Each structure stands twice: as C-alpha cells, then as structure tokens.
Image (cartoon, rainbow, N blue to C red; front, side, top):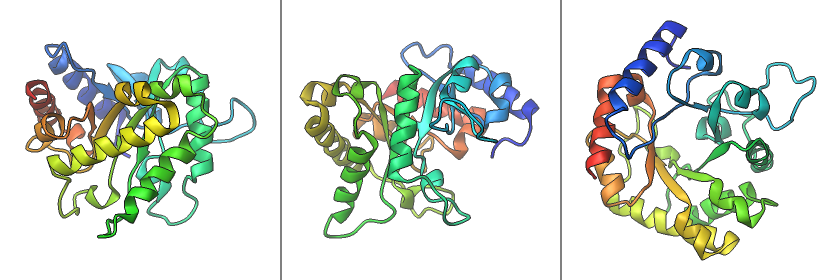
Length: 241
C-alpha cells in the first residue's frame, strides 16, 4: 500500500521512467496499487488479479479490466497474498493457478511468485518450491509456459526486518533448480528461455550480484522502488552486470 497518494505515485513513476530511458537493454515495469494505475507512467504491472472474467465480485479486478488500463504484467501469488499479515484467507495453489490462467487468457504476462517460508538443512524447501510451480502451472499448455515470468522470493529474506538476502551463489542454485522444474513440465527449450527474476531485500549493493553471479533475468524490487534515486541506482548496476 505504497505510496500513499496518487500525486506521489505519479511523481515516483515519472522520475523512474525518465531516468530509465537511457538504459536501452532493460525493461522497467511499475506495479502500483490498483487505484493509481491510471495515473502511473511507464510500462505497467498490477499487484494482483481476480480469476473470474466478469460478474458480481465486488472489489475484485479482472484481467480484462487491467488490460483496458494498459497493464502488461500481473503479479500472481506474491508472498503477501499467499501469507497475509492478517492471517488466513490467503491465496492457495488452486486460486493462484486460476489467476495465472486468467492472465494468460487475457494475453498479459503473469509474474508467478514462488518461495519458501524458511530453509531447512535437509532441503525440504526445494520440494516445497517445486510443488508451488507444478500446481501453479497445472493444465497450462506447455507451449505457453514460456510466457510466464517466475519470480523467486524467499519469504525469510523479504522486508526491512529480514536478516539477510540470498547471496549470488544461492541465487544461481535456485535459478538452475527452477529451470530444472520447468524442464520437467514443459521441456528443455522452454526452461532455457523462460525468465526468472529474484525478489527479496534487493538494493543497490546486491542487485548486480543477482544478475552477474545468480544469472537472474531481472529483479522484483520492493521498498527501494519508492525512492527513485535508489531504484535508478539498481537499474544502473543491473545494466553494468
């Protein structure tokens, strides 16, 4: 729920899009709160979507409504939707699957978020992530799986109180693991071309590492995106990676 006003949303997005113009090889997508979408500049994303096409669903927003607002990307299954702070009522694997298919049917690009709550020494968290991906892509045609962007966001590494983010080597391991899971679902060609991005305490200091060492295709940036100067610094470091 940031920023707090339409004026701030417009100001932040204008500064980011203006500053990012010089980076020709980088796509910058801005996903503001839904009420600010119409006032936000640049390539637009949405933070969430509802899976029904239309109907009496007060307060919900369909993929077609987002498309009419020039939205190109939709975040699906963000950790704060899977595990809301209020407790209970979060997105399930089933609803995430429905949302992802609704986004694809509207010919928008879903950004599928996956990630573990905690890590264990026995690597059970890898099975957890594998199941998240398999269930999210259930009954999705193999020939369009490659249109999905997978965002790996370990929940334990998110937020201002997180002890630390992943390091570059760990990010690379997860990149390879996710591509292996995608290969099992949709084949090696799709696994090679699918975009995988990282989210979790991304800042100016570590952004370049996730791209250069972690071989990530991009980043899902949280609080740093509200400060245009810092966010542009992240873009500059990614460009250099």
